[in-house]
Structure formats: C-alpha cells, structure tokens
Image (tube, rainbow, N blue to C red; front, side):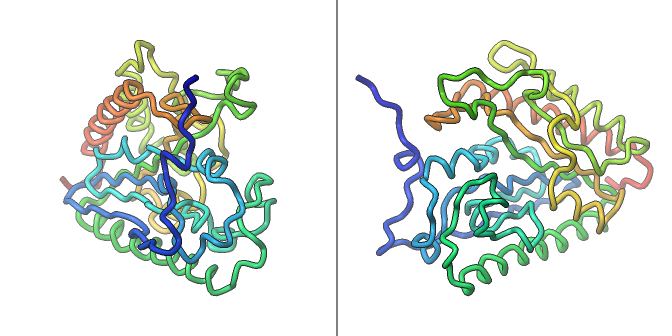
Length: 285
C-alpha cells in the first residue's frame, strides 16, 4: 500500500543539537520598477524557538504559503522569506506578528505561552528589520522610477474539511484572488485589468484560471497597508492569493504542471503590468 509523504519528510526540521539557522530571508536587487515578494513562503523555525513550538509540522505547513516563491522570478527586486510566518509574521503589525494567543491564529495553538520574552523580542527585531529593508528599497525604487509595482504573493486553502471532502465553492473562491484594496483605480485601473488578463492568458492544466479582484479579503494585510500609508500612489500594490490548486493541502505534494502553468501566467501578467506602468504620468524608465 502506498502512503503519502508527510510534512516532516518534505520539509524536515534540522536536528536541534546540530542545527545552523538559515538566513531569515533572501533579497535580490536589480534595477527596475517591479518588486515581487513571498513573505509567507518559509517554513523553517530557528533553532532556539523550536522547543516552544506546539503545533504539529503538517498542520503548521497547511497554514503557511509553500511554493509561492516559485512564481516570483518576474520581479526586479525579489524578496523571499525563508522562516515560517509563525516565527515572525511580516504581514501583521508588530503587536500581533509574534503571538501565543490562539485567538490570533484561527484557534491554532502555535506557541507554548511560556515562550521566553527574549525569544519574542528576537523575532520582533527581525520583523522590524524587514520593514527597514523594505523602506530602504522601495524609496530607492521610487526615486529612480517615480512609480513602482509591488506584487505580494500568497496562497490559501480550499479543502479545509479534509482531503476527501468537497472543495470550497468556486463562487467565493477564485483560482487567483487579486487584492487591490489600496490601489487607486483612477490611476492604476488599466494596469490592474491588464494584469488580470495576463494571468488568464495561460491555461492551467487545460483550463482558463478564474481570476477576480477583492473577493476573499477586505485588505491585503499589514504590508500593503503600510506601503500605501508610507508611499501613497507612488507604489501600486497588488496581493495575489493563489488557491492551492497547484498542490495537495493535506499530503503537501506539488502539482508540477499546474505550477508551471501558473508561473507562465504570472510572467505574462508582469509583462502587462510593466507595459501599463510605463505609460503612466510620472513614471521614469
């Protein structure tokens, strides 16, 4: 009888006595007006925090956004988080970026409430460093180009009732939900439309993906809200929420052809976004 691989096999944690912490993130910088980020792509937890972790590995992975970094190479500045969102959630304000309260994490108990305060402060220092780095990079990009496009990639579950249960209804769960709650459509509406068309231009395993705008969430989280508050309409921010049609939420296995199709669509959308951005008043190539 064949058994599905488990999360510990696919994403093993390092042995606690010999672990060397990996970098919290990777940041690649090239000249150009497009930034792509995958701030929830990571899974590893730093060694000193692991004794305080209470959630099982597979349950934690289900609430992270694995493989979203696969789609992001179309950017000029590229940011990938290597650590779990539960070590420091870069899409939340500092007050809830590291929490031991299950009410803040959909009822899931992530951390032992006796986690030392020093560990929390280490995580919060990384959270603060991320926002410092983003401010430095975004300001440099705006100074160079006048207007920029920021694409923040995430994913979401649609089979929460179990591997054999029915998927969530398509009506409220598009294949790709574009979060554009901070976007001024008077300025960026054409860019948004063309970006969505680019995503639809590539079939995913033979089917045109269902791409809609602002269906599931009222906002894209703290990161896009912060970008808008700090930089206004100089930064066009779109959050991409990919339904996990490219993987099995329960076995964590990837659907390689679906991933390749989605990446092709993302690259087509980025090309459309670049072209629309270049036509806007105030943009400098």
